[in-house]
Length: 295
Image 1 (cartoon, rainbow, N blue to C red):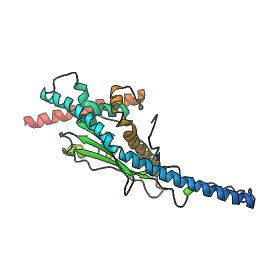
Image 2 (image 1 turned 135 degrees about the vertical axis):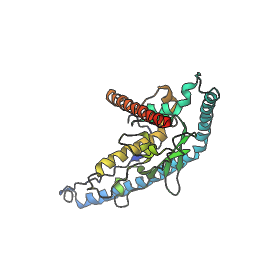
Image 3 (image 1 turned 90 degrees about the vertical axis):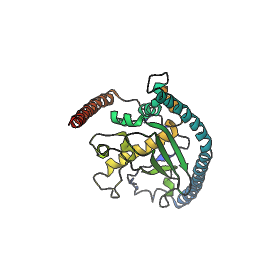
Image 4 (image 1 turned 180 degrees about the vertical axis):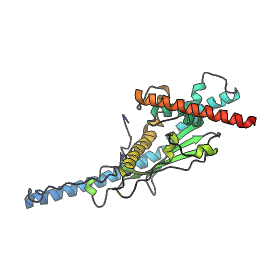
């Protein structure tokens, strides 16, 4: 994901164990006086780490203090978009100059989201009326991405959530390796599908897989460990990207003035093929339903 710019510079935790290679000459390459000096310098470095921890905490506290002001602005944005949607409803869906704006968040996600969004996903996401981020500093540092939906025929949830947990403290067993706050875990939510066919897990990928992140095996020798770890690293990056870039800059993504996640021709081709297959499935399903109704 290009141009990952963040206000508080949280990092993504790499959960693959790093093997430290110790040079056999380490113990003999320094004199006793040098070792003593190095120990003093490392102690000073630990003091800077403590300052970094305090700095991270202050940054998150400051960001939290501005959350209300940000939400006041986002509430105004939501009100404008709601008025566009209401206009379309009152005119029975007839075309208007603001018709495209009624799919504001769908278009924002398509311009910024790196994963696959199917035709079926688009129909559901056309009911998306807002995306917000909520910050929490106590007792755990975390943020929640909220996807707000209007009542629709697909899901009963009015809000779908994804929670990201951050660690702001150094590893007590290896404090010198501290490199700032990092996301180390995420949790999705249960989607209440209204139709049984939507509950079935299909082989095709979906935007809504975002709300069911895989669980990383505790055993690093597990054959699925590396693959799941890679998926989670991408998930962590995406969550932070939504919070820091997509939500505040949504209108610029909508207009196309910013597009960090340009799809390659190959991925666009794959999307078109998948969309054609999806359309064929929907036509077949519709035909089946019509036949059953005739009976």
